[in-house]
Length: 261
Image 1 (cartoon, rainbow, N blue to C red):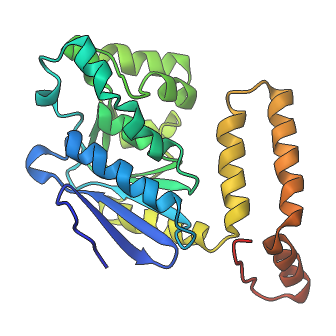
Image 2: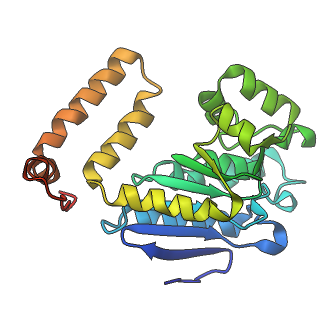
Image 3: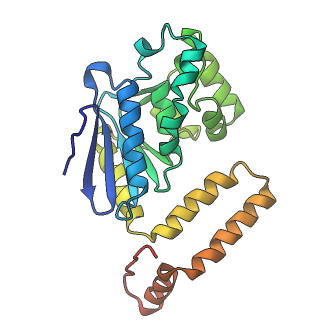
């Protein structure tokens, strides 16, 4: 089922518990303009509140995941104009989505497209996918997490090479340096991402959400503080009906039924 409220982003429900967000601006290579950003933020805010949605897949087209930001919208902008746009408020609903978000990347994920993929929790890339942060070639730098998320994903030396040169990173290399989760044949990218989403959606939602929250929050904490956060979340889950159901199903040798409580 599709809800083509706006042609730049489509929202679909391909499986129980799974939402598919598809960027569809083929004439502009899926470049991120204001309409795309606002629609993405609107959808992710709505999906975050829905108990029936347990995982989200984000994808683009076959040749372009997202070619970058729409340069026409900022080429002549002033610093105050850029500040006033507060685009960070439009990225935040994706970064803070409590549900696991899986990027299915085919083709080019450049600049803002690469940053958009890195806002997700898992990245499934087609074997011909290409990633880059080419902002330096425009006299700029990544401005939506491309320096900070990249260095946390791949480490200082690879991140510096990618951001300072604007070089293209092919999918196999991206996998080798830890920039993506999996590489699959191009025609299997979306299918694999949806399969992962369905697998996650079948698991107890509270445990899944706590794992995501603790991993992301703990990554920026000292180890002792992060371990305390993990321990408290682990203990909290013993008050959930799903934990009791999971244990009972294990002992009774049956498939568990999780309710998200």
